[in-house]
Image 1 (cartoon, rainbow, N blue to C red):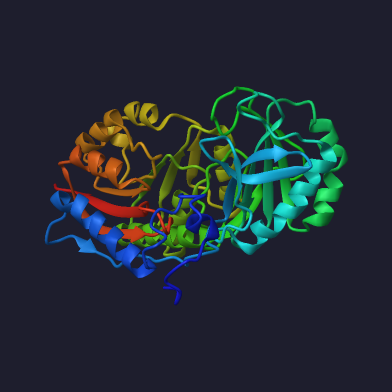
Image 2: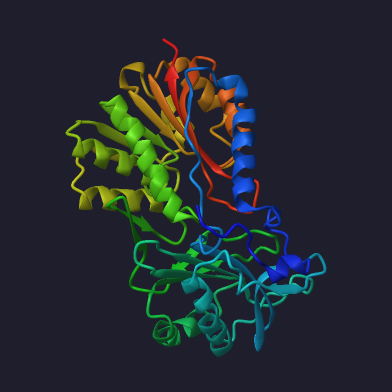
Length: 392
C-alpha cells in the first residue's frame, strides 16, 4: 500500500467536485471499510469453507488511465472537466487521479481545439460542436488514444488537416477518432465512430498477453490492478484444470485469453469460447489469440444470454467466467447457470449489490474464494472476484 494516506484536492476542498466522496478518509480506513462492506453484504453466501483473501490496494493518485472530460467554456478558453448544476464548467485538468501523461496532454488538446475551431457544446443553448474528450492510456507503454465526441461531422476534415500537429505535441499518441453523438441528451457517445489515424487500436500488454483496445471497447480504468485481477482468475482456473472454458461478456478477452495462456504454460489442454455482443471487441480478441498462437479457441459476437440458452448440456463448460456490466448477469442467464450443473464459476463484478442479487439466484453454488480489488479509491466502489463451486 502507498505510504501516503490522504490525497489533497483543491477542487474537493472548495466544494467544486464531489466525485471522490471518501477523500477525507485515510486510505487504509477506506480499504478496511470496503472489505467490511464486501463480507457483510455477502455474509449469507459465505461459510466456514470460504477463503477470504486480503484485498488488493491501490495507489491513492495517478491510478486512472482513462479520462472522460466534459468540454465547456469557449473555444478560446476551453474547459475540460465537468459541469455543475448551473451549467458552469469546472476545470479538472490537474486532477491527481489521472496519470502524469494524461495530465500533460491537456495543454496540447486545448491548442488543437482552438486550431480546429471545435466550439464547446453549450447545453442550455443547444449550440456548439465538441461535447467530450475521452482519453485512454496504456499501462505497459504509456501510449494514448484520444476520442473527440462531436455533435456532427462538419469539422472532421479540418481535424485531419491538423492531426500532424497534435502528434508532434504528443509523441505517445497512437489512435485518434471522432465519435458522432448528435442527440441533445447526457449520452457519452454515439454509434458512429470515425477513426482518423492509421492505427485503429491501442496495444496493451498485461501478464504477457497483448490486448487490443479499439475506440468503442470497454477497458478497465485501473490496468495495474486489472493485470492482477486477470492473474488471480488464471490461478483459480489452473487449480481447476478445466477442459472447456466459457468467457461470457468477454470484451477484448482479458480474462479468457489470460486464463488460456496460463493453462497453456501448465500444459493443460483447454478450449475457450468467448462471447461478447460488441463485434469490434471480438475482432480484437481474435487478433490476440492469433498473436499468441492459441488455436483451441472461438470468439463470437453474440448476446451472452442467447448464446447460453441455445447450447446443449453436452456442450457446457467445466469453467464459466463472467464479467458482466454493473447491472449484473441478468435473471434469465443466472437461473440457467444455477440449473446447469457447470462445476465451477468465476464471477468478476464491479457492483457488490448486483453480485449479491445474482448470488441469491445461485443456491446450487457455494463460494470457495473471494477477493476485493480496489479499482476505485476514494469512492465506495470496488471490484470483487469470487470462485464458485457447484454443491454436487
